[in-house]
Length: 374
Image (cartoon, rainbow, N blue to C red):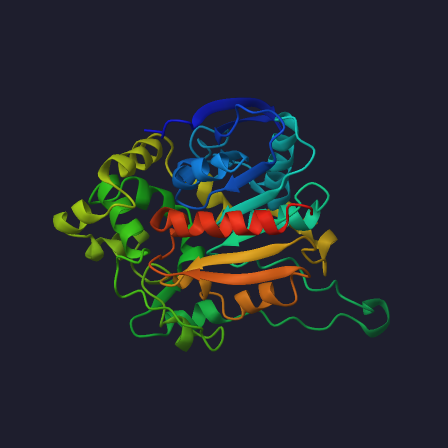
């Protein structure tokens, strides 16, 4: 199912696991390396439409199945297995180890989409000497703690008031819940993996509902993190309290005519995702939505910014850009020091590099050329 010029291979002993990668432009040694990190529920395969155009312009392009996905290690994990291998720090270690295994000491750009966007951001923040620029897509990088608790030895610890947003969502009519909270629960994997209407229909409805093809996607900036604002999000973000994700997207299953007209995700391409997730389930990817004891170590980077050239790319019809009120503004301002712009692509929803690959490729190439000398 891969376009000619993209190869698949397994790289062994990468931070203790085997990583499956797709790569293009591998036939000419010494090319600048570009690393692409996918999101949920996707795979390295989601970069198939942009890899060859970048390779044709002189880049070695590598897209791994991230730990827990596809043919990479950790894909068969269970809910009760150790979470620490899926910590942000350890997954950044995976990416760094992959770069070294491929014989590189630096990366021209690390590009991340959805769940891969914050991972790319962390890689660039932690190791700017290796990851010389970063493209974050569809999900704004949140960063770590703004600052460590300060002067507490002299003034005492100030009381912390946790957010009540989850309880407030339950009080809505109808009661709602945030999808990330749901993805952190044990039933989520089974609900999607063995969906009542079948895995194929679940994925087709899910991908459709978050794309520009679903005409109800007309996102806008929210005023704040309140239940009254969050209830404006579609059901795939703020779900009905009594439903799983499979039930949340099932009513929006596209018609046979709409499926036939969908050129960005044909039935043949969808089958690739269906076959892989039928084999592995979703738990390896869902681990990334859970509180991970290993992530406490990110406090070491409190207050640190991304100091390499950076941009953000999203789709104009993507609610993911705005689901965290103020998130994009933080990326544009306080979390980056060499920010070069926000680009919202017309005719694209959440799956921007699949829905509008030509436009996205041009943004990639312009960014890479602009920062070729670091």
